[in-house]
Length: 109
Image (tube, rainbow, N blue to C red):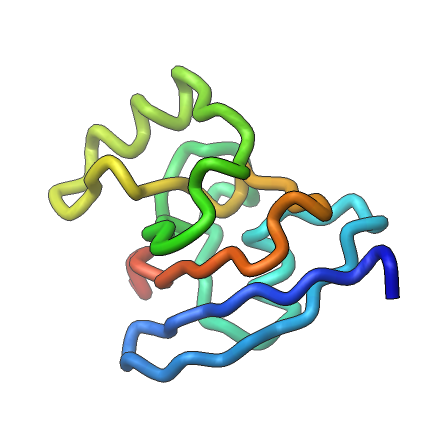
């Protein structure tokens, strides 16, 4: 299917699952993770204000959109954020993101 990519998601418990993501819908990665039954609080509703959707990009960071100043400011508040950290609410996936690999890091409370 031409509007479908596969990404690999590592949950907090270390389990890894591939999920198929349609790229022709207007959902961000946070919404996709929630729809795929991952526990993501998303307290701020996707406004880059809470960092509960923090993910670590393991593979494929070069194919993501550039990080915004607002996202960088929020990530700077996290003790475990690094150069591979992104907020899932700020990422919209496209065909270029086929094979993206990430780990969920955001808080559960």
